[in-house]
Amino acid sequence: MSGLISIVLWIIIIAAVSGVLKRKSSGGSGDQNPYYNQTPPAPPAYTPSPAPQPGMREMQSGTAPVHTGATNYTAGTVPDKSRYAGTKNTAYSPSQKKGAKADMSTTDYLRQKANLDEADHRQEKQQEFRRARWETGGLPAAKRLYEGDSVPQGMRRVACSYCGADNLLPQGSGQKYTCYFCREELE
Image 1: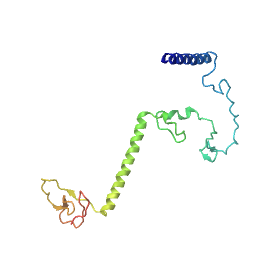
Image 2 (image 1 turned 90 degrees about the horizontal axis):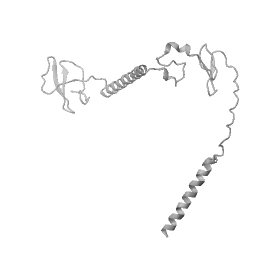
Image 3 (image 1 turned 30 degrees about the vertical axis):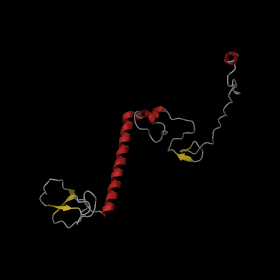
Image 4 (image 1 turned 60 degrees about the vertical axis):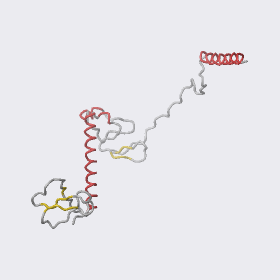
């Protein structure tokens, strides 16, 4: 009985394969796409918009005019490359599109990225300084006294009452200080 089943399966498989081969040789596609061998529809004809005022250019969405200076570019026009001939391997100018970073060399890109990272780092340091100043009430932090070091001339050793860290304060100064470690007010 199992032999009969395997023979029937072979016949079905051969019939299916031969049907697929027959369809491919006759030029038909296997998925029977209804749009196969049809010409695509023609795109709509371009109708120019009314001429904008001198010095104004419409945005691609067509909602609001944007002032561009003395030049007047309408949609679909591109300025001459010769205008930007002197800007090769430099950052793109604001008049170029945002996607025009291809003209920027790798070193210029890295330099620009480093400048942005440096500005971010400076801003983060300022925020940290402001936060620390706000938390301590504007009091300066004492200097750290390392274990085994002697107390320098004109300084005195003060232990923090909260964390026990050794701090160095100037002798005879009437100013209050905070602990270098926990920023708790000393004395």
